Image 1 (cartoon, rainbow, N blue to C red):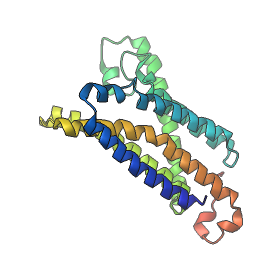
Image 2: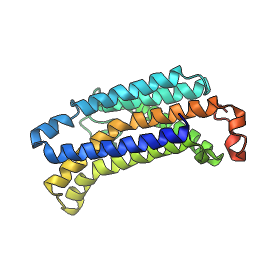
Image 3: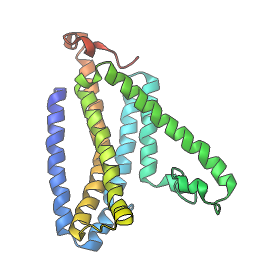
Amino acid sequence: MAPRRLAAGMYIALAIYAVFLLILAVSLDGSTLERAFSEAGPFERLSIAFWLLLAVALLAGRRAALRHRVTLAVTACLLAAREASWHKAFTSDSLFKTNYYEDPTIPLAEKLIAGPVAMALLTLLVVVLIYGGRLLLQGGWRRPWMRTAIFGVLITAATKVVDRAPAILAEDYGIVLPELTARIIQALEEGVEMALPPIFLVALLQYGLRRGAGSAGIAHTGGDTVDADH
């Protein structure tokens, strides 16, 4: 299957999936909806499994440089760990929150361990973003796999905004969203998060298809001949 056809199929599947999430938000009763999209619910569990599957797929690939595959696989594992709430399982609160380090009730020894760990994880994220930015500057946006990856990154950012929006509106502006709107936001945010690793899996598959086509298949676009292995 050509990379562009693969992307088209992905977008169609995502549209159908979004409709499915909307139906769940409207039709399920409150307690069932809460269980379905809770941290112990099926969507959250599947999200963890998909991130780990992505990590395995990255390591199993042979077309990208090993250092890049390992970096991205570790990132996928860390995202799986975050979905499993490991970022706050071994500390008093999330180690990525500034409030955690300002809280005088939290032992200093705990902070001294959590701080370097948080910095290492953030550094890894920055490395991944720099690598992606370098590919973009080299004309990577012309490649179907890169466009799919960018789409995944944008959707990731959108889910974080949607996740925080109800709390910010309520706490800072005194705006409480209608129940139906809150239900739809919850279903879409948690449901779309589960779809993120499959999106990046599609990008990985597109990358393999593109590289497998050989240099003759990409020589027609000057900026598209940059090898992602370097």
